[in-house]
Image 1 (cartoon, rainbow, N blue to C red):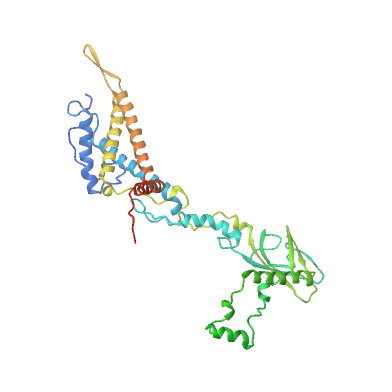
Image 2 (image 1 turned 120 degrees about the vertical axis):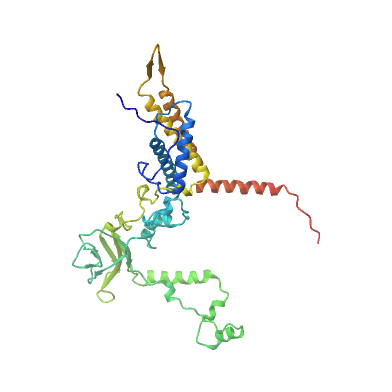
Length: 387
C-alpha cells in the first residue's frame, strides 16, 4: 500500500531550525510572521477549497528566501550607492541597515596618484640620491653605480624616475635688496610717525606697486644668466648634463629626488582586510525585526510567488490525473508562468523604488523642488517701501 505524503493541514507551528539556513530563526518577529504568512499563502492558493500539495517547511523555505532576496536587493543597492565612500575601510563591521555618510575618502584616494606625480603628496615615496661630480666632466650617467648613490634601490638595476634635481640658481628673492628698509633714521622715523614702527618690517605697509618687485627680480635673473655662470641642467633618458662645467671647487655633489618605478606600479597599496570591490563590502543579512511594513509586504508577496512556483512544479509532474470516464487536468504550467511573471515584477518594482532613493536622485529631486519653490516665490507680489 502506497504511503500517503502529508500536505498542508491548515495550520502549522514554527520552531527554530525549520528553515534551510536558519538565518532569521531566532528573531521573535520572524517567528510570528512566518506562521501567518504560510497560512495566508495557503489560503491565497485555494485552501481549503482545494488541497495544497505543500507542507509547512515548503512555505517556511519560501519565506526565508524572500527575506534574503529583499536583503540582497537592498544591500546591492547600498553597495552601489556607497562603494566610493567605503574604499579602504575595514571589512570587519556589518553595514546592513546602517547609515553610511558620504566622504571624500574614495575621491582623495583616486587623486593620490596625481599628487604623487605632481610632488604634492600621494602614496609613492620620494627618495634622495646624489651624484659625485668630477672636474671638467659635464655629462653623468645615472645608472653608473660608481658615482651615483641612492637612498633606496641599486643604480643600473632598479628603474628610477627623477622628480627633482637640486642644481639651480638661487631664486632671485633671496638676493632682493629693499632700499626702503635701511639702517638710517629716515625711513624708520617715517614709519614711527605713522604708528607702524613696532611692526617688522615696516616696509610691509609702504604702498608700492607689485610690478616693481617683479621687474627687480627679473633684472636679477637676467643678470645671473648673462653675466654669470648660470646653474642649470638637462636630463635626457639616463644622461644628466650640468651647466656650468664643474671646476672641482664650487660644488662636488648634485642631489636629486626620485621614485622607484616598481613602487608606483604597485597596485596593492592598501592593507589586507579593507574594502576593495563589490565582493568584500561588509553587508550581511538584514535584521528582520528592523524591516518596516512596506518591506514586509513585499516579502509576503514574494513568498506567495515562490510558493506558487513550487506548487506549479509539483503539479506539473503529471499534466493530468485519470479518473473513471474522465481526466483531471492540473494547472501546473499556469502556476509556473504566473509565478515567474510576479517574481520579475516584484524585483523590478523594488529596484525602481531603490533607484529613486539614490543620492543622485535625491539631489536631483531637491534641486527640482528648490527651482519650483523659487518660481512660486517669484509670483508673489513684492511690497513697496517708502522711506
